[in-house]
Length: 132
Image: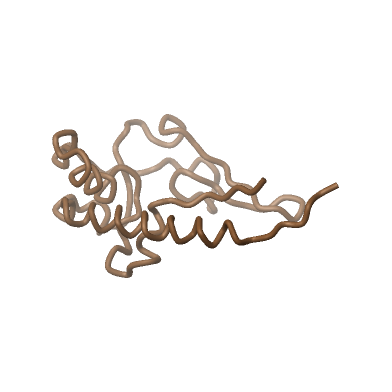
């Protein structure tokens, strides 16, 4: 069996015009909801927050990444671990809700779907030797 993980976060890597919006729940996800379910998106409710630095200088938003025994690890936090409220954080481009639009959401979704379909087709071609 093979497994892989891909995400809409890669849209900015595939289409440079979409770079800088990869946040969580701010312009990118609001825009995707404006495209997919416009009656459920409320861009005016978004606010920015500052994360508490719970893991030290290597802390990056909601995760900490490091290495152990030659392998990589990623520790995820919950909102209550790192912030006093559920407001959001991101790049200036990602938190400026005037950037949220149905068109941006469509671009992110379409770019991600096209990439994911192509990725799956290529991933299926990878032959992994059996383990014993």
